[in-house]
Image 1 (cartoon, protein in one colour):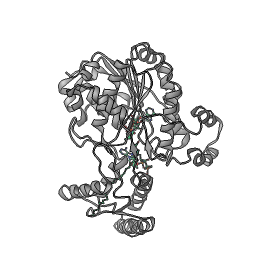
Image 2 (tube, protein in one colour):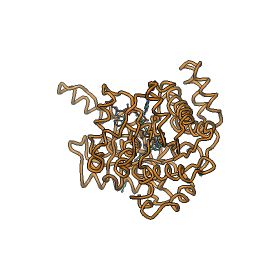
Image 3 (cartoon, protein in one colour):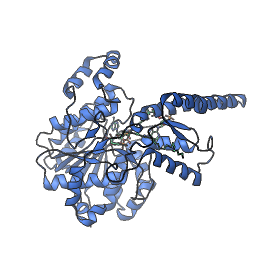
Length: 420
Ligand SMILES: CCCCCCCCCCCCCCCCCCCCCCCCCCCC(=O)SCCNC(=O)CCNC(=O)[C@H](O)C(C)(C)COP(=O)(O)OP(=O)(O)OC[C@H]1O[C@@H](n2cnc3c(N)ncnc32)[C@H](O)[C@@H]1OP(=O)(O)O
Ligand SMILES: NC(=O)C1=CN([C@@H]2O[C@H](COP(=O)(O)OP(=O)(O)OC[C@H]3O[C@@H](n4cnc5c(N)ncnc54)[C@H](OP(=O)(O)O)[C@@H]3O)[C@@H](O)[C@H]2O)C=CC1
């Protein structure tokens, strides 16, 4: 068993965001490689009419956990779902559950966040800033806590071209933002948001930067590390290649291309497509948890997990690969044959949106109406084009992220752990 896997043996681990994309893969890796861990506490809320237990069973019964059931047959006994809603200031966690978390937790992985680019400032601050602050307060009351690992994003300072593994100050103190949101009404918040977020492209990246400042300001004597993944894509190797369960980031665009909905996207083809497999990110998370707990660095270290400087790819290469894949393995019943290209300027982008996206959608909806069916294509296409417009900022720029801390950590690992 590897040093890192052995470290998590017997540990009580708290994961927020465990029902999300990153959280599920983290849980799977922990159960598969450290089946003798004591317990994984997950903060869960009921969703889409499912109870906590139903959500946990659905996750454990998914293909992702097939290998876990072989190596950790009693996985159901080792996972403790705790009702929590991070929208509530005290997370609405019961006294008994809170007492158990405070007295038993050894490691915290804080993955929960809203990753929507178009969330309201109030909701994004609640989740990405206030909830982080609340969790840090909880952590400061955990006598057995060995490490607190905060998941941010490599784009939290995307208003800079070169980004170091440091926490950058935000123009306005997080506490001032939190206090103001308590009494400002939504109309005023909407009005001041553009001035507040300044040159950040959206509320998501801005509130992730605020969350990092909160970690720095409220770390007290906690042993903390921050991890900044770039664009997290499907699994590369573990537990099997190609697993993804959401339409965020590139996933939705790739699906829309394969279904023939998307025919053109405004992108800089040679810009770096900094996509990192989710299992690679999870391997680093576990390594950072081990290193932070065992080596106890004097300050909060920031680790970038990006692919651009280790194994660079660009959007052109990725696009060609995506189209070649759909040539070989097409979706069933596509709207049109997959055939897409990048546009270089707004005018040609608007032209292709009209000619190749909106017009065919309207024509198809007329056909649906004529055949007595409910029109849906125009709404779907507008939603897709809105999503694409939000992603354009990231596919028309490149960034340089320093990776000194990540490389330092890799050098501390045994050959077995370096393989992940
Ligand atoms: C020789 C010629 C060669 C030519 C070259 C080849 C050219 C080929 C070009 C085409 C090929 C292109 C392939 C590569 C290009 C990829 C480009 C993409 C780049 C991506 C960059 C991402 C950068 C991200 C940076 C930061 C990363 C992070 O840190 S966090 C993670 C990123 N966060 C996100 O991605 C969130 C973005 N999404 C949103 O903000 C919102 O979803 C939205 C606002 C964009 C859309 O919101 P909307 O309200 O419209 O939709 P929503 O309600 O969210 O959902 C609609 C329905 O879909 C369901 N849904 C939503 N989310 C999910 C989910 N995660 N999983 C599953 N289902 C989901 C949802 O339930 C809705 O369904 P209904 O409720 O039934 O309507
Ligand atoms: N995906 C990516 O490309 C990248 C992600 N990241 C970061 O990684 C982390 C995880 O991202 P990812 O897994 O993609 O995101 P997901 O949207 O898949 O997961 C978000 C998680 O947060 C939970 N959550 C959201 N709101 C609440 C709430 N009110 N109460 C309790 N739990 C809540 C969700 O629970 P529920 O299932 O109930 O909604 C879910 O478990 C985030 O911090 C994100 O910023 C960083 C870089 C890139």
